[in-house]
Image 1 (spheres, rainbow, N blue to C red):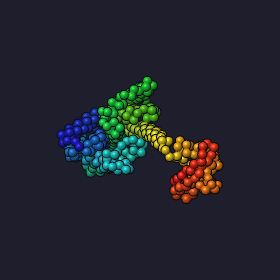
Image 2 (cartoon, one colour; image 1 turned 45 degrees about the vertical axis):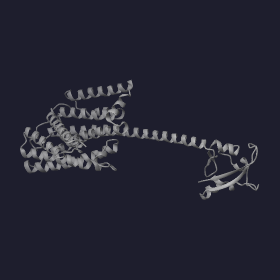
Image 3 (tube, one colour; image 1 turned 60 degrees about the horizontal axis):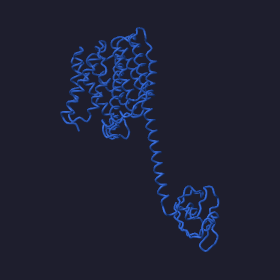
Image 4 (cartoon, helix red, strand yellow; image 1 turned 135 degrees about the horizontal axis):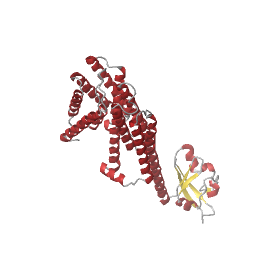
Amino acid sequence: MQSISASLLRTTAFAAIFLAMESLIRVEMTRQSGVPLVWPAAGIAVMWFTAQRRARVRWADPVALVAVIMAMNLAAGAGPAVAAICAVTGLVQVSVFLRLLPRAYPGSDGDDAARLRRPRDLWALLAVVATAATVGAMVGAAGLWLITGMPSGPATATWFFLDVASMLLYGAVTLHVETLLATCRARYGSLIAGWRQRNRVTPTGARVAEYAAVTLCLLAGYGYTLTAPGVSMVFPLIALTVWAGVRLSTTYLVAHNVCIAIAIALATLHDVGPFADLGSSAYRVLIAQVFISMVSLIGLALALGRDERATLTTELADEKEQASRQAKLMNAIVNSMADGVTVTDRDGRLLMHNPAAVSLLGRIRSSDMPDPVGFYGFRHLDGSPFTDGDLPWRITAADGKIHVLDVTVRNPDLSEARIVRSTATP
């Protein structure tokens, strides 16, 4: 549990990050509708409140969030009423997100179990994000309608997709970091121990070269597309995201998504790049956010699918190794027993035996031998012939009960006849 001072310190740090990000990437509100096109406010708020959901001072984070949003909107030229609506919308939106997050993961025990490990987790996160963004858009649109009139359809759609893109992006970052921390603690006991263990593994030259190649291609492709005039073909660059999602680590992919989102947003808000000539400011931001969402979803779906396959493969290999160890242990126990042990199936085929069984019977039959009675020389104690139906394991296979029978064994591999007690169990 965090101390009060640590909780307040984290609140101050997140509020500063929130303020810095809004100051870095911000445009004036759209005059026609009054919808503020601020990015990535919703995503940073989601990251902030998700990380602080176990804070001891619960009131500090909502108060700080409302204060920062009010201050930023007032500084951008909005009136007090509009700034208040934006603050309430942000608070409601992040509250819905935190309320739905633990419920989106079946079998989770509270919100601490919300992890980003497989594609199903990504779709659960997307559902939570879409719901929170829908509620936020409805609250914001209704509030602005009461003050300035109903916002236009494109502006409201832009508000919705802007929040979806930012919450999806930074929500994925938060859950991925929490997944890494939980994995390190589970496997190595602490984050520091996990970091040291990871550093002991030296990547191969080919692996480093592939990371470098993907990075250089991303820098060259997006750098040219976002700066060269008249270039509008940005969607083919999604192929680089596919490359990173299929081949590189999920951590790299998450960082890749954040960098591309910031670059696209900055270029669009400054009227450069492939989306700069698409009409109104709201429409340009809308298309940019759709592209950012596509990049994030495609990359994360591929990376998490690969991670899930790798996890399942590792678990299968571990289970095989464990089964092999158990089989070796069982064989060692059976082989060391003084009592003779044989295992047969329902058809009487010999599956396994131990050395004591060979010493006791004088010989051991092959698994496909049809006549064990004649091979071993079984007879009843009174010397009468022994039939296949008299075999204890035949009787046990038929009725499922334990049967004990004394038999005489006489064959060329024994120096003299001996009496053997056979216990057959199902």
